[in-house]
Image 1 (cartoon, one colour):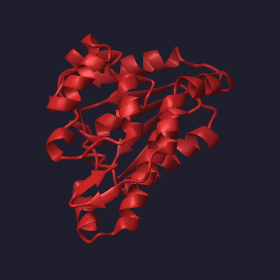
Image 2 (tube, helix red, strand yellow):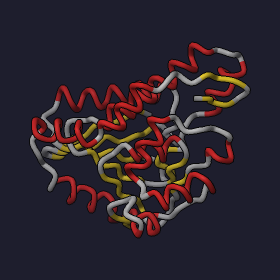
Image 3 (spheres, rainbow, N blue to C red):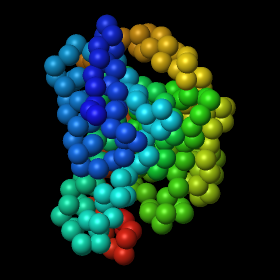
Image 4 (cartoon, helix red, strand yellow):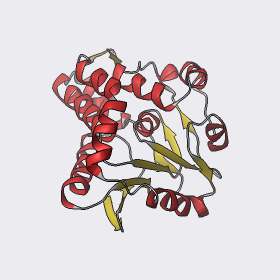
Length: 236
């Protein structure tokens, strides 16, 4: 398995092909490397990110990997993980081209949070939920996460999702303008690519526009204190 890059004209399609695409150090580094490659070694003007798993886009933080690290009180590795995760989210936020995520299945916890950093979201309508279960897991959101979530999700819907942990369908997300469009999986990538090809803008123009639009998110990420790992929870 790997993270794959395919060019379709000026559109770079990055396929996350790491099983359930759980966030751990290995996955994060591969994703960052893929984004660096597209930015520095291609002439892409649009980024599309999709998942390869048949039912899951991303299942969030890889707790099976992280929990033993926390139990060993390995603060250095835990801190490195959080810093790399937020570095990925920051990179997506200020990426110098329109970014589109094709949510090809469930987006849970950290996977759902990651989707909030993209400029546009499309989601399959026949299977999959977007969900923030942190309220049940006992994991608070970092400031740089919540700021992005507020950008992507209307406040009334965000309140419901983060305080109840509700699983939300693509149709409901479209109704509340969280995603651009809900599509059956058979039409999802066609819809995404048709939209993406219309976003072929100059990087030199998009870059400063996004920097200004998203400066609150960048500030929140850059100024948040590293979380302390204690008792199996992240504390800000």
